Image 1 (tube, rainbow, N blue to C red):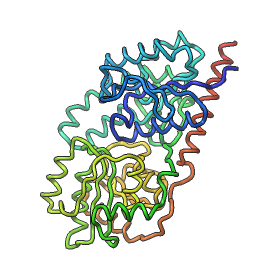
Image 2 (cartoon, rainbow, N blue to C red):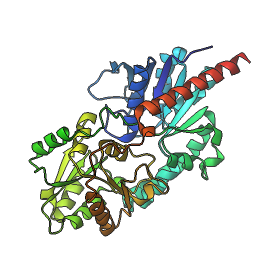
Image 3 (cartoon, rainbow, N blue to C red):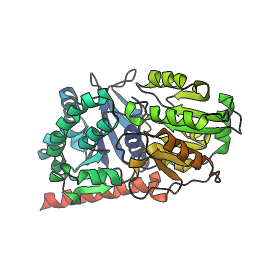
Image 4 (cartoon, rainbow, N blue to C red):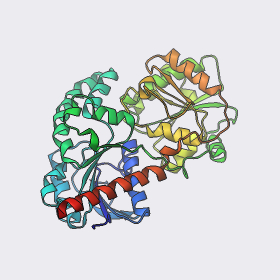
Length: 400
């Protein structure tokens, strides 16, 4: 029987390009698979300032020249196929496509019939279309037809994968909802939740005190934190308006915003127009260890996204360090991962401010609130079990 030895991942974006949820999930999985004894090769977009081939944390990275991570296109499809055929194809035991990054490799299935093809789904094109209209941004609405065009591409690709891993229940539900369900076999959909490195994201009061000291903030201040890409769909503007309402007449509140993105300048202007800029600190992009420290410096996480999210890492990371969270009402339409999550309509500043006030009043002991199912060790074990089963099934089918 052919063992699972070498996993090839197609992932257009990694933390080497930009900080964000999808790339963090992909990179953490790659590193964990290597730590578990597997060989992992990642095909990704060109990384400015880095060689086209290098090793990081034991992962072999092939950064494809003249490709961009921000958007798929014919150049990306050609480059991934050429790179795959000229290197790891003969040693590959399983191909993992992070989102649509591996769609260009699907035509090679007949050449390597023993190799299972798996897709890691972080959302659907229809969900992205809905999110852009929910954002109520003219720019988002104008780009939404591109997402509708991708619905047909997705539906052509989905049946060609042996398995589709949904990173949360919300994504799994979207995959089996019209129109996507017409192309997806529900038996191929597997929910493996986003995993959190609980060795990094854990209650650490000392780290939190160090961050506050660096910022010149008194230990008695009450701190709200938001951590995400600074994009219109992430709802930071809604967060600022809610914080302004909460902070009216108070001087004991601070708002810590961690991340980078195209909305930075606009958010700075809005904070100034709301006359809360002296209470708001934009930390910029930070690494994972620093992110854990910033979360430990806060008293509540705020995430007023208008986006249709799967399992937002920022919320899970906040729970892991013991923070209560206030999130958009649509994120958890059913059961939420923790009783410490408060939900509110993101576009209603009064409702969000009330939820923040309630969360700040908890003053619960700083203990991890992350359910064990979200620990990275648990999620990686599920991936390995799925991969090994698919490899066995392919080997058996080949002998038949």
